[in-house]
Amino acid sequence: MMLPAAAFLAVFVAWPLAQFVGNSFFRYQPIGNGPHTFVGLANYVEALTSPAFANSAWRTVAYTIIVVFFEFALGLIVALLFSALGNKSRVFRTIFLYPLMIAPIVAGLLWRFLLIDNSGIVNQLLFEAHLTSVPDQIQWLSDPNIALLSVALPDIWLTTSFISLVLFAGLQNIPGDIIEAARIDGARYPTLLLRIVIPLLRPVIAVALIVRGVDAARAFDVIVVQTNGGPQNSTETMSLLVYNTQISDGNPGLASAMGTIYLVAMMIVAVIAVLAIWRPGSDNA
Amino acid sequence: MNGLESRRATSRAILWVVLIVLVIIYAFPFVYMLLTSFKTPIETNAIPPTVLPNTWTIQNYVTALNTQGVAASFVNSIQTAVISTLISLILAIPAAYAVTRFRTRLGRVFILVALVMRMVPAIVVGAPLISLFHSVGLSDTSLALAIAQTTVSLPLSVWLMASFFEAVPGDLEEAARVDGCSRIGALWRVVLPVTRGGVAVAAIFAFLASWNDFIFALLLTSVRAVTTPLEIANFQSQFGLDWGSMTSLAVLYSIPVILLTLILQRHIVAGLTLGAVKG
Picture 1 (cartoon, rainbow over the protein chains, first blue to last red):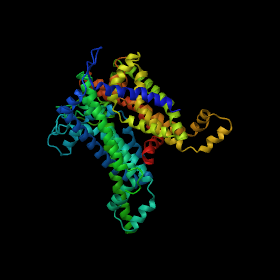
Picture 2 (tube, rainbow over the protein chains, first blue to last red):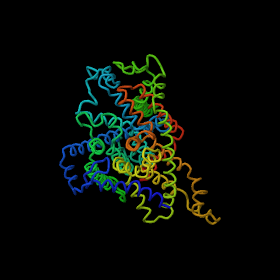
Picture 3 (cartoon, rainbow over the protein chains, first blue to last red):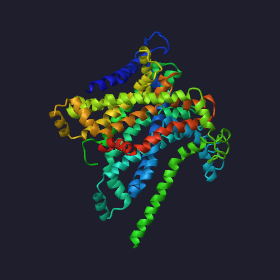
Picture 4 (cartoon, chains in turn green, red):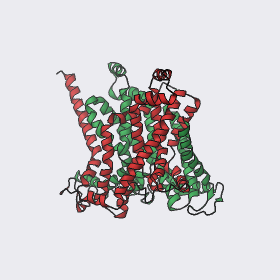
C-alpha cells in the first residue's frame, strides 16, 4: 500500500533530484539539444571559488538566523501571553492564525508596498511618531546594508503564528502542578521560565525551529517579489542564485552544482540540529 | 479584594494590553492592504500615504478582474489545487495506513525519506521537472503543476495521516475483519469515517500548499495553466506601480483561505501542532 506513494516520490522527486545532481557534472545550453560536455568536478570548482556563491551562502545563513530568531522570540512571547490569559484569548488566537494561510507571494508584495521609501506607510508612521526626521530616512529595500533584514519581515510576519501556536500547544501539555510546585518553592517568573518551562518545551521548540529553519533557508517567493535579489545582490540568497544561474544565466550545469552543495549543506545542518537540540531518546534536558 | 489579588488583576490587565497591541500590529498589514484596495489609483500612490480611503471605490476590483487572464487564472488555481489535493490524499491515505498498521522497518524508512524529501528546495526538483513534463506532452498544464505541488504536500499528508491512524484502536478494525471485511474494506468503512477530522486536516494543508505556491507555477506554466499568484505578481512588473489592482486581487485571492481558516480553525490548529507536540 505504500507502493503508489513511494513510486510517486521516486518519479517526481528522487528522479529529478538524481538528474539535477547528474547535470552538475556537465556543461551545456538549457535550450535545444546542444552537446552535453562532461566536465567532471569543474562546475563544483567554479561554484566553490566564485565570490557570488560564497556571499550568497552567507546571506542565506544570515537570513535564516534573522527569521528564526525573531520568530522564536516573538512566537514565545505571544504563546506565553495566550497561555497566561487562558480561554478568553481565543479570538486573538484566530486573528493570529490568518497570516499562515496567506500566500508568501502576497505577503512579499504587501510588505514591499508597506516599505516603499517615500510613500510607504511604515516610514510615514515612523515619521509621525517622531522616530525619524524625514519620511524616507530608512531606505528599507534600497539600502544594501539593511535590505536583507527588510526582506525577512514578511517571512517573520507570516510564520510567527506557526511558532506561537506550536509553543502554545506545548505549554498546554505542561502539567499545572509542576508550575505550582515551583511557585510554592518561591521560584520567580524568569527562573520559572528558564529552568522549568523552556526545558520542558525542548522537543516542541526543536521541531518548530528545525521546520522553520529549513523553510527559511529555502525561501524564494518573498524575496524574489520584493527585491529580486537586489540592491547590489544584497538579498540574493541560495534559492535565488540557483534560479538565476539556471534560468537567467542559462548555465544549468553550474546551477546544479550550486544547488547540490546547497542541498547537502542543508541536510547536514538539519541532522546536526536534530541531534543537538532534539536529542531523541534522552529525557533530561 | 486583598493586596495580592489586586496585584494579580493589575498584572493581568497589563498582559491584556500587551496582547492587544501585538495583535493590532500583527493584523495591520492585512487591514492596510484591504483599505488600499478600496482607494482610488491616485490615492494609492499619494505622498504622504493615507490609512483610510478618502473616497471608497471598487474600481480596483473591476480593473483587476477585467485584466486579461485574471479570471482564467482563478479557474486554474482552483482546478490545480483540487487535483493536487486529490492526488495527495489518494496516495497518502494507503501509505500512512500501511506504515501505522504493518510497522515494518521499511515503513519507518519510508516516513523518514519522505520527510527528507520535504527539505529539497523547489528549484532543485522544479528545473528537471520542466523537461520531464515536456517529454510526456504535459507542458503548461494544470495536471503537471498539480503533480509538482504534490511533491511538497505528499510527505506532510503521509505524516499527518499516520499520526491520526495511530490513534485509532486496532480492535475496531479487528471486529470489522472478523465480520468479513478486507483490509481495504476496513480502512474505507471503519478507519476513515473515524478519522474524518484527520482527512480534513491533510486536505486543507495539501490545498493550501497548492493554492499558495508560486515557484512551481513560475517554472512550469506559461500561458494556459497560469495561476493567480503569477497574475498578482504581474501587476507590478506590467504596469509599474499598480498597487490598487495588485492589492484588490490579493484580497480576492486570500478570501477563500481566510474563510476556510475561520470555518476549520480547530482542525487547522490540530494539524499544525500535532506533529510538533508529539515530537
